[in-house]
Length: 139
Ligand code: SF4
Image (cartoon, rainbow, N blue to C red):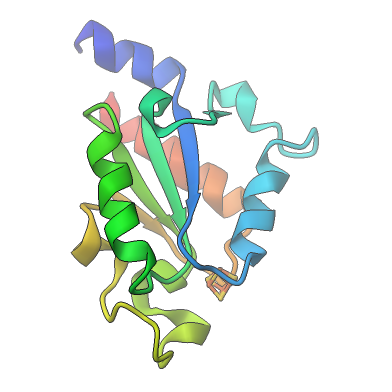
């Protein structure tokens, strides 16, 4: 295991990007940093800039306005960056499946995605499980 990978497994820094969700997934992500779930015990920390992040957490269904900005954000991130789609919206659109403003593609057609955590919204436990499994794939 490289030194970089070893460091990553101890401390994943996460940038949360909201790509037009209903906001329930975002609220569940905020739950992760409360004392009840305390995601920092796994070394996972939310950061304020994609340039500092190892993981891009995306919520919502990509619309026409957001799609180019999401690509730009992905390009700005230091590589490697792991992309995780949170919620059913990122997979198939969920509630917004037939929306006129949907870019018409799941998240992985816009940027490469490493993992999806489905649910509407997924529970914090499911998100923790998904992120810990992602760390497991790095070891
Ligand atoms: S998956 Fe469900 S809860 Fe999450 S943003 Fe989409 S509609 Fe909202």
